[in-house]
Image 1 (cartoon, one colour):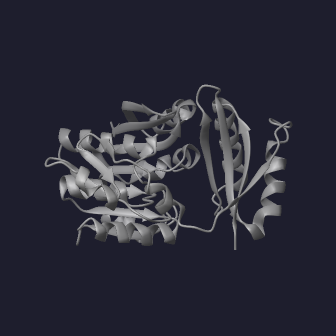
Image 2: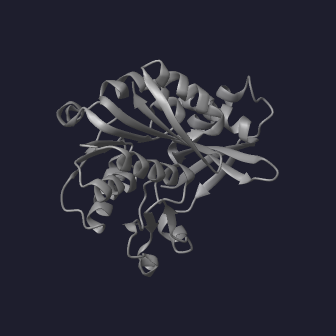
Length: 292
C-alpha cells in the first residue's frame, strides 16, 4: 500500500504555526508530521502529514478543518511516496557529517574516517536520524560537550529513531544507555545500527510511547536525557522527563524550530531545569538544560 504525503506551503513562521496546529489535531496518533525548508532565500517551507493511502481522506478532512481558521487560503497538496528504501537511496549521494569528534557516515564513506574520529555508520533504514539533519548534528555536538565537562553514569535516548545518538553516547562514554521509540520499526532499525557499529552490549532498546515502560524506573534516574522529537510533545512531557532526571543531570532537547524555542524553555523552566546553551542549525535549535 502506498504512503501519502499531504502538505501545505507557507513561510518558516507559518510552517511552525501549522506544525503546532497539526500536532494538536493528531495528538499522539501514528501520523508523522514534519516541516521542511524548500527555498531559504524566498522563505518557502512545507508542513506535511504522512499516512497510508487508506487514511488519506480522513486525514485530509482533519487537516482542512484544523487549518480553516488560521490558514483558510492554503491549498492542501498531495504526493505519493515511492515504495522504495528512500533513506538508502538518498545516502548514496550524502557526504559524511562532522559534529565535534563525531563523524556520521554511510558504508560507502568508511575511507573518510580519520584516526581520532568517533565514527558512527548509519546506512539504509526507515528511521529518522542519519546525522544530516540539523537536529541530529546539534545533539551530537552537545553530547560531546556534556560528557567532556562532567561524569555521566547513564543515559536515556528518548525517541531514538535510527539509534545514532544512543550509539554516540555509548561510543564516547562506554556507559549504559536506554534507547526507546514509539515506532517498532525504528527500534528494529536502531538495533541493526547498534550491531553495525560493533556495540555488543550497553544499549538497551525498548518500544515505548513516552515514558510508559517499566524500563524507565528500572534503569533511571538518568544523568543524561536526550529527546530529539518535536516541540509540542517535548513540552507536554516536561514533568515526566524532569522526574526521571538525576540531580545535577543534563537534558538535550531538539526537533525544535527556532521560533518554538521560548515555548520549550518556558515549559522546562516550570519544572526547574536551567538553560545552559542553545545551538542553531538550519532553522532548528538544540537546547541543553541542567537540573537546578
